[in-house]
Length: 594
Ligand code: F6R
Image (cartoon, rainbow, N blue to C red; front, top):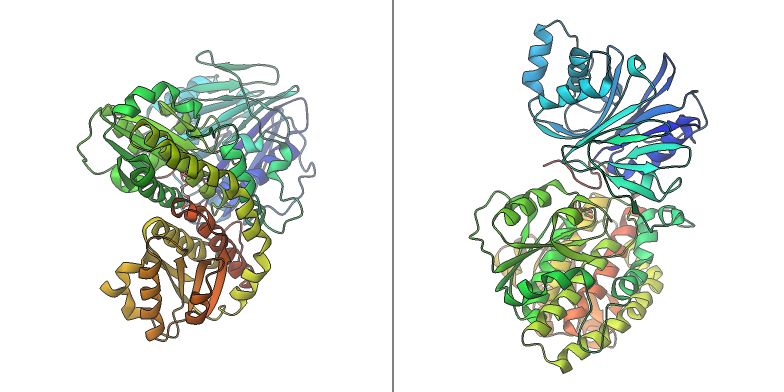
């Protein structure tokens, strides 16, 4: 939520900052802004809407900060775009200042005039109040007055040749380049220039200069292994399609080197092995798509892992009071590793002595640093706001963790071998579905006139039904809901008629017959049905309107294969409706607000 970027070095800063803003645009695309310092001169530019320019050097200067905005406090307009300036102090900010109203009132009483409706602007005013010749001192004193979350970058011609940055609950990294330094909200904005990064921790501040950086404490330099072309669209029209098309490779990469004959090797769980063996319950926590992966994990842990499992939304569990103890473990599922609600829940579980683990995609993210262990999903950068390949990576990793837990408990060698053997084949099966994408597109074309959709599934495929519905509503703005098939008769069936089609997930599994009964219930109300079914299932063809076939697999692995056609379904739907697929309205990736 909001992207911040800055450069100080030998090169012209403007093109570097514009390029970084484009890379971070998935974090917010209501408006953007940039300021460039050239000695005493400052160039400031703010625009509403997405970045269309190519980043030609419009302004001279080797120091610059910029910002992609996702509006939280104050509407979408030029005056609310960052950087915010007061008395020569320029600030970009990601986060929320909770006590900004009180601070603003005090400042107004002192004669300050505000130019925007944002919370951020108070930071520039506070720095101006505290300034005594040294920008970092002023920033430190100003931040002491602030309650809330922030990742900030500050520049001023009054103390030039430096960028002051600080972090509290919003991510900030420093990229160390040959010709200078870059500050950014995440590594995707720096990998065109360097792979050497430092991640700032909460409460830390740093001063970046052309040839040096100063952090209050000694930090480790990490190397990011993402390639620069992994964050380009390549030949695809949208990042989302590119990322869906990578789903089979994601399964391959998530499982690579981790599958043994009848067990899995997960380095990130090694140090927690004993505690996991003793654990009597697993909590799985995520938000949005991450929650649906967690919910799939709940079924996997119970069935394969042989352990009680409970999935929760980070945004809810953080405010509840579950009885927690040291004999429990919690797995946090997140692509970005920066989702504020998850991080708040993580703190709660950690404080209670629960073993905390992460299933995370973003390397070096807060979640990976705050948990005691975990497993990377290894999906590479995910840029489209709607999460697709990360979801596939998450459920693949959760399947492996279930095998790990199962082998510590009652999962037999034979059963583990069967799941692992099938897991090895899943990338090829996923590829077959991806190759069939035109057929899914053809089916979508028949349903474009509908404004409501119902998605149903049972057991392992109930969370996938919710994931399919979320994806459709998120990028096509079509109303969709996902419920267990067995719940239809308890209410939702009242909505089913010829105007509300149902997408039914019914691979050949232990609940197949029950799903067929649900489909009959829908058909009896004149509802159209699109089934996602196992290849060779000719019976279903007779009952439903359209079928998308997926290869056969064992029950526990069906979620991986049923999710892929639903991602394609949502993509083609949104494409036909000409939606802004990679940047759906009102949303942003990496939700760092609560
Ligand atoms: C939906 C989507 C969101 C995210 C959610 C959590 O397509 O992308 O629902 O899944 O905001 O994000 P992470 O995984 O970064 O914690």
